[in-house]
Image (cartoon, rainbow, N blue to C red; front, side):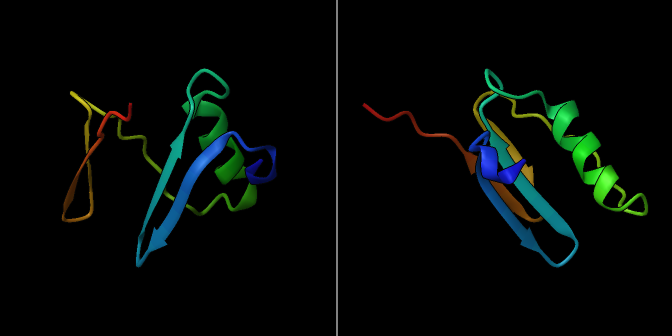
Length: 67
């Protein structure tokens, strides 16, 4: 899945994983299902961006528009 270029950004830190993707190319549930196939013991939950912001661990990540 990561090889298919549907994932824009992937980063793991301690017990958190941040995956950014183009929802026009792949659905969040597909990524979640893929992660569960790798390891059923993984506890993953989806957190969606709101108002171009998303919380990851102790960070608030803000999307900036490019020209």
